[in-house]
Length: 164
Image (cartoon, rainbow, N blue to C red):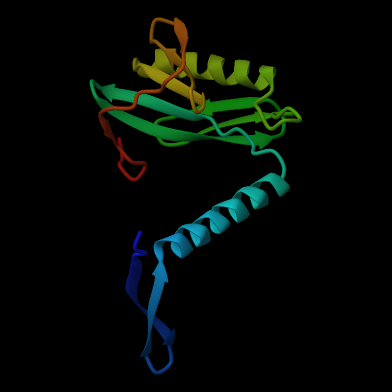
């Protein structure tokens, strides 16, 4: 089987003082390219494993209208117990918000759920708490909630830069 060679052309700025450009032509086989990519991926995974457990970062997803959602990251802080949910900023404070494995503590999750129920009732909007990938809780304005394994995925996501 014939080995295919990839040829590329990268252009990047070397020196900002004189704005002189530097060019580099590279050539490598597909196997070399895949090996380099695999080595980078393995280095990233090793770095992530060495940094300890990844802390769980929940997200509040507000349903503005059918198929239009606004995701708001929930900032998790260490401090006296407090919860605040708004259309632009949301946070939770808890004395010990995370377990040893980086997941949200059960008390902290209950506080977030209670705050989301109150916010949903106040704003009269459906909301979704996305705890992690594949773990969500849908909150209704009538005070009910249901656990699901998926957050709203389809539809228009309105960014944080928009004012409501």
